[in-house]
Length: 184
Image 1 (cartoon, rainbow, N blue to C red):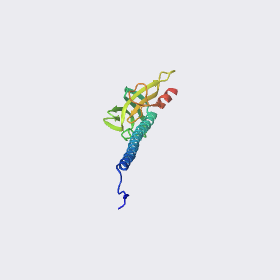
Image 2 (cartoon, helix red, strand yellow):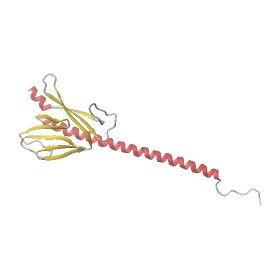
Image 3 (cartoon, rainbow, N blue to C red):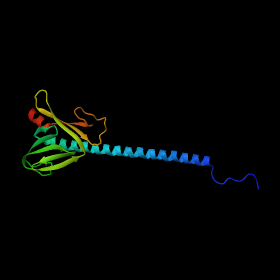
Image 4 (tube, rainbow, N blue to C red):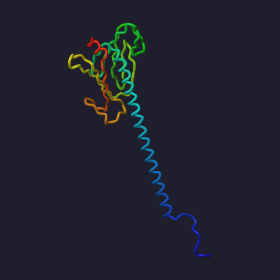
């Protein structure tokens, strides 16, 4: 027999190096997976926040454009009055009332509701906070601007607004029919 025999298998040092490299590789992959998963959750939350903002803007720009009067009930509820003589407007419950009618928009829990008559319609969900205020024209003293601070769930922290504890966006709506009434 020869003194030099062929080695069959791995030495302990080679095995330890292979295990260490495997652990480093799996740790890197797991870290990348967790980072991607966290990014996907943040993107989904931001998409939901954008959808709530888009929905609120659409609802209020349509309703306020048609409203003949706007009245604050509280900082989280607003009443819009409409004159619908030709029955060409839809109320928030998709009915077509004839004549004058009112809608009250309010926050309940995390939902934006519209009260019309005796029924309430859920318009949006995923709202953490909501605040309404009216701004008057300096010359006339007539309310011409509705300011809505909206805090949807998932909005990043850098969207801070004064008067709100949560991140929020500010949506301004000109009270066009009020301005036109004043101007004529």
